[in-house]
Image 1 (cartoon, rainbow, N blue to C red):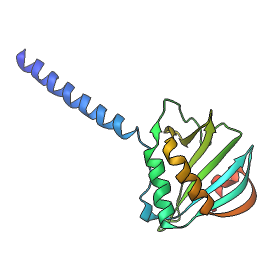
Image 2 (cartoon, rainbow, N blue to C red; image 1 turned 60 degrees about the horizontal axis):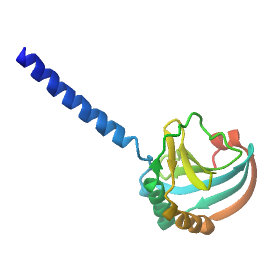
Image 3 (cartoon, rainbow, N blue to C red; image 1 turned 90 degrees about the horizontal axis):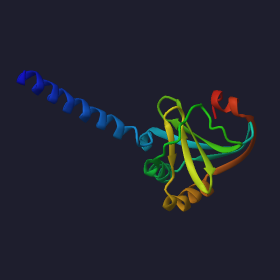
Image 4 (cartoon, helix red, strand yellow; image 1 turned 90 degrees about the vertical axis):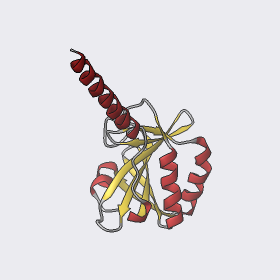
Length: 158
């Protein structure tokens, strides 16, 4: 009987440790390694249409942009779709150097705060101390007026 209690106790401790490790890893926004990216593309969306494309190419800006995302804190809001259910948001597309693959996030404002929606993973709040850095990065990006439907943004090679 003592041995059974001992085994159950050890198993419980291991299980709780694994649960803690897994839950801790999910509390942070997943970001790629900055050296793997060729650019970050931001597309401002109003309604169902992308209206402006901003391309971030400078490695220092890519690094700072990803640092802002890494500093974001998970909220208890859920991400239940590919794009947020907002009338105005910005898509964030990571373009990778080697594969040409893309990874997708969204940024939106709610009640004066900025949030990052990682599809089907969670919603993260951007630290207010990082907002001015984010604005500077966006200002330095290459801007281009566009007109494209949201669904085409996800399919196309921007």
